[in-house]
Image (cartoon, rainbow, N blue to C red; front, side, top):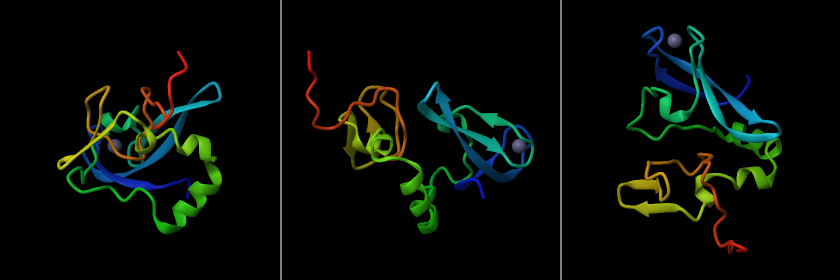
Length: 123
Ligand SMILES: [Zn+2]
């Protein structure tokens, strides 16, 4: 097991199959996650490009066991780079979206526009 698994309808092979996730780093900075079809190996560069099969349902990214692993793998600072901690996160009755990019987002997404909640800009 390399991490959480999710179901997609792959545009490469047409199968409903699982993707595995792969952290994408730029230098030492984690900039996001890529999704790779376990059936044909097609790589999706981001969650937005990944054709999740159950897009209408909330994907269960972490099982209870995975969460424990995640807590030890990611340090606190990295985990708080997700949209759930971002001051741009907009909550409304239809879901959560990023106030900067205006796209729907998950609390666990990692976003280039991230700014920590409650942090005052220094300049
Ligand atoms: Zn595929």
